[in-house]
Image (cartoon, rainbow, N blue to C red; front, side):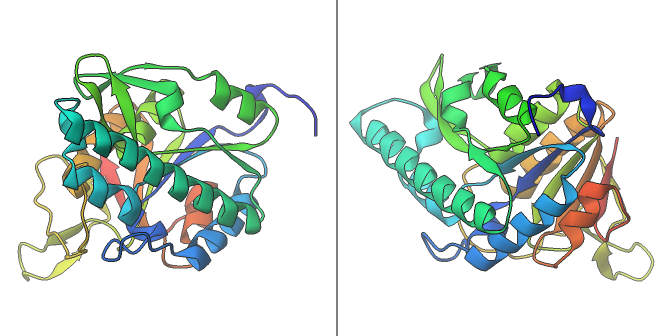
Length: 267
């Protein structure tokens, strides 16, 4: 294979695997191992001739701990510091298990902890060292990062969501597509005429969404923040899709640019 230029393939795709897909958010430290392994196979087959960056959420590993200790508020006392450390441990544990299952599925992947490359200021990304990501892509390995607790220049530390990381990387690296992989078929809306709740083929700012119950703890804002991050990418000219990763084959087709059920964010 050898060392190659990043311009030698078909364009970058950023994929965010939601915590609701890779874990059961209702049960702490519960890994959806078979789902991750199957997604690894799909990603491996779809990424043969294109660059791909993978981001995953914290799911039932990180979110309950981060919420318990209010880690997103920053370093205020020893309680928060303990939470920072415990959340970091949980994220590392999850990342190792996710990588292991992706590799079992046939994906050549390497973990790049977000805390080692991102620094925030007042909860917003302030700087990012992209060299580890570039280095992985140059040798044909998929870099995998995740939502994490990171150092913050104003707060000491905070929680940085995988949704924000995915949108940031897609925008900064001028990705062709950004795919949010969730545990439902897309964004649900209510038909104005019939009152029926259905998946929106396209969703734009100002449209009212119909939330579906998913359970679990999420300290990073859930679907509302996902949409906000996604719209930032869409407004930068990136095709942004929300699809169901629990249905076999959909992620593979989405990476390849083939039609797939789901919702496209319309700027």
